[in-house]
Image 1: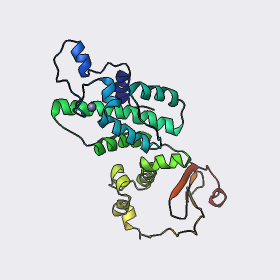
Image 2: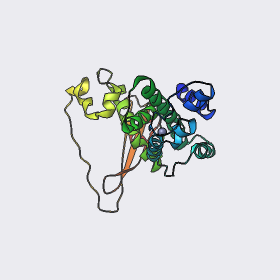
Image 3: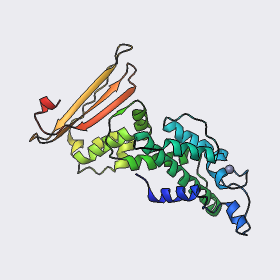
Image 4: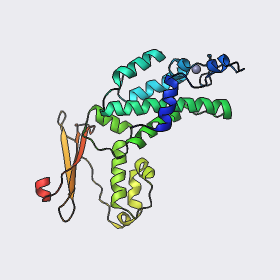
Length: 257
Ligand SMILES: [Zn+2]
C-alpha cells in the first residue's frame, strides 16, 4: 500500500536525486545557499530530511503518533532504522511506511512552496497533512485492534472514519460529506432520513476502579444472510483499550451475537 507520487519523491530522496542546493552547485548553478525550512544551514538531502531542526521535529512528532519512541538521528541512521524495521505487513509497518514517504513528500513540497511561492505552512499543519494522508489511505481497512493498534486508530481518526463510512452506507440520502462526518459525527442526525428519527442520547456508565467493560453489538440483514459484530473495551476511566469488528456471515441474530 503506497501513494505513487509520495513513493517517487521518497525514492528520489533515498537515491539523492532531488535537486537540493548542494546538487545544483555541483551542476554549476548559482543558488541562495540556505535551508528553506530552517533558514540556517546549507541545503543537502541529509539536512532537509533528518538533520534540519524543523523537519526533525516533525518526523519526531509523527513517530510519536505511530507510538514509536526513539531519538531521531541523522539520515543514514534513519534510513538504516527504516530498512531494519519496516519489513512485513503488520499495521504498524504499513502506517510507518505511509507516514515516512508522506513526511518526505510533505517536506519537499514545503521546501518548494517556500522557495518558489514564498508560502509557509506551520509545523502543526504539516503534521496534520501527514496524518490526513495516512488516514485517507487506510480508510476502510478492517482489523482487530488492541493497545498499539487502537492508539494508532485514535491518532489517525480510523474509528471515526469507520463510523462515518457505516453511516454513509446506511443513509444514502444524507448530504453530509465523509470528511465532515469524520470531523463532526453529530451532523449525521441533521440530514436525510436519520434527521426524522427521534434521537436517543445514551451515556456510558462508569465502572468501579480497576474493572474493564466490554460492549458488543451486532447487526444482521432482515433475511439473515449477512451480518457483522463490533465491540469496544474500556477501563474505569472510560479510556478505550481496544476495539474489534468483523463479519459473522449468515444465521439467526441471537446465535451470531
Ligand atoms: Zn534546515
